[in-house]
Image (cartoon, rainbow, N blue to C red):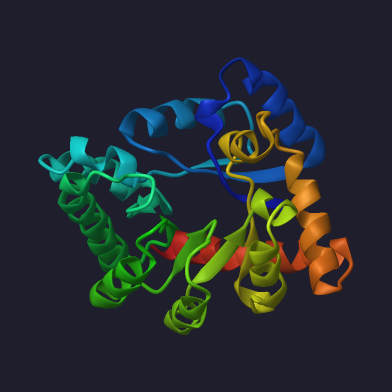
Length: 249
């Protein structure tokens, strides 16, 4: 089965019917992450249209200031979700340092939930890669997916040593640095993603549709010198680890 480990289905708007049709036609299991409470509720409603959509809840660092003073309001959704995401820190796209403390409070709260209840996480680390790593260590979070990693290459082994996996997405089609990461991640720690529809929009100027995961699969298979079917099986097996963790949470 094709696995897209990170997409934002609630962002498709008028393209949503076509996106759902592609998901069903190509058998793509989509981990549909959230940015905030509203995003999660919308994604849950979308998931009613296909059994291949897995809605998950998290508060993205861009929305963290809205929740830093009411963390308890997140509990009902953190309890329900099988995986916490998209969570993390962003010190790159968010240049206003006055927001960083709020990001930390919300991220740490989600890490506490993950550690206490054994829930996996899907993490945004842009510009904050060392601090995210140290936060995971401090809270004892080990079952995490590092989404669209583009940080210091020297930290990759530290994340791997902690037990993290990496999801490689559409930037592998455009970046030699991401190509190198995609080629060297250990087999059992590799996942694929699209960050649809925005990832492809940012890189190529048009919204990413679910089938772009086929391009990612083909490119990563080429870089790793394996057959695409073999890589698809490996990634599906890797994802089952997170499904088992989520089931046990």
